[in-house]
Length: 295
View 1 (cartoon, rainbow, N blue to C red):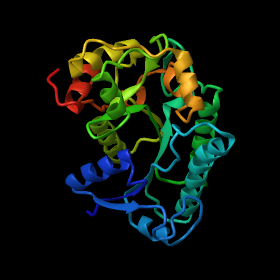
View 2: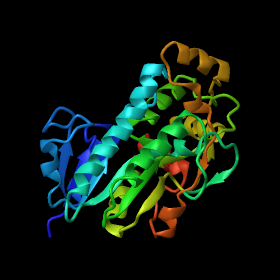
View 3: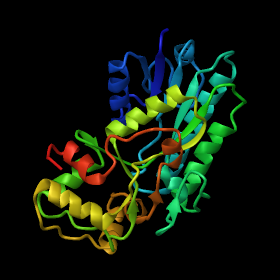
């Protein structure tokens, strides 16, 4: 039986790793890139022919949330997600046997929640990212009915050896700037890139529907993350970054401080209940693997 997956956003960090992993596992992977086969993230076109006979489609499209949150960029962050999801739904609605649909979302849907333990059943937050995610997932769930599963993949901070959030953080830690951010008590929902791509394949093969938190099983506070990162790179000193400095940096083109300071204590309850097993169940082993150290 031919197993094929269409990946939208195949050139990004997540897409590249997912394509490589699925190809090694014997899947036929079709990558859709902006500007090819009429794909522009908002319009129907020749790209739809790639969906015929596919087992699954994974839509990872969306402008980076690390862009400065100007009015224009806020609109771009929202529009790039909702429009791409909406047009995929339109295309799938006309297929007699549509593929399984895995659509990106984010743990940002929960907002800034302090120490509250969050699962897929928790209510959404009310800040900008939460509102984006709510509308993003609405474009998925409100598409015309389909007999195939639809999954909203709520991804946390993804760590890998060759990109993602860890690369700049590790560079800072190696020069003594690996201290906590703000008060350091904000919870960080993280996941190793290998577990992330394994989870996507697991969901495609498991016939699961609904929201799934793509995070590791043990979230950590930022101060604990900073400590483990310093231990991993063998640089014991880490100058902390106060919240006001992050706010100042955002005005100079850096990410909005809430991206770094919001506390989101998320666990992958649905994945665990479905039987998924993480290769990297704790942060120390994940960072050691990514940075080439022994835990």
